[in-house]
Length: 475
Image 1 (tube, rainbow, N blue to C red):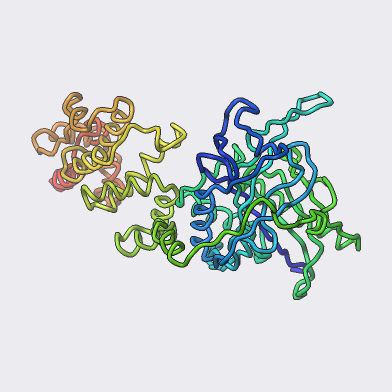
Image 2 (cartoon, helix red, strand yellow):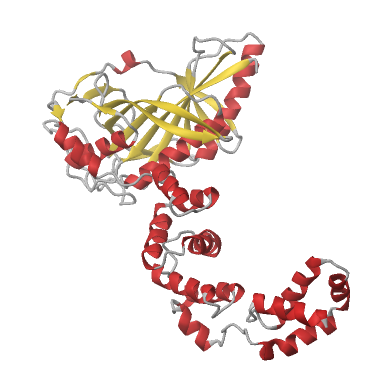
């Protein structure tokens, strides 16, 4: 490669506290426009901010999860800029003394592991939201979001490909979901990402001129935007054209970036200490107490599933990808420790239904009922094929597996006498497969077993059917 790609990511996460960062207004999404507002978040004269203690504690929790060092004293600053959805014309943020610094997140791409340094994590307040009227010379502004506690997670420029950026964002989001400090819903704006990207000659240590990408509403869009910028900047360098340090927006329809404005520097914001807020501090004991509240994080959970429960790595990846599913799995194991079969149910039929219903929570399924269904299969009461149809009915009606099996007479047939006529019919109707099996083609026997299963409505015991077929064909 002639050029090396250098990427740094800035992730903004809205915290799910009940109230805003510096006032008592409700911190909820979807309220009627301009109803969750007060003199503080509107910056009216005489109003004074008061820090939300839960927002600060949630911020420390995130910092600890990403191995950051917590500062002894935490200071807030004013970041000045004008924008119609910023009622105070400044944002309460953190500049030279952020909440935490020097953390990291380990990622894995293409089978290789890499440590991405996290430069800083700091707490600030969000701005409002502009709503642009289509084909009209004006915009609406909703201040409900103004003052929402916002955590900014800034990586070092350690990423060298769009795929690494995608992996970093995916792992970051999953960890945040496990911490339960945000819903991380990009469609709601709860999680947003800006990407800084530059190119430099391979082997060069000095960073190239960077551009910042905004307005990307999915990790897929981040990846696509970075891929486009690599091509655009490569063309500029090949043609000896200057790359301008600027902010660029992503056009989802055209799948390309376009210039928005020149990139601001820190001095443009005229930072100075927030005069209405004191310094804050945590004792070591308070930090240790918050550390004890951290849940088992995704990578730790995956490692335990693989090493202790002997779950295949790919299956473990699917299970931990959604904390609710991983929790459900562990609830099942408290009832029955058949980890492999329960995992197969979850990552197969159950997740398939969850995708149809758009969420795992929407399914009418309890751990006890899934364990009961699995036990019926393991004990030979129903075949695996029938069990899948039983699961379908369970999710439609909310009934228990036992009741559905009894009502529909779905019990597995394992008796030789009961299967004798079915086997004779299969042999008589599939002479070519019988001949193939007798000629030494083992796959033909599996086909015949499948025909027995079909004729019995999936109720035949597959092992018994195979054994009876083998015995009958020897005659």
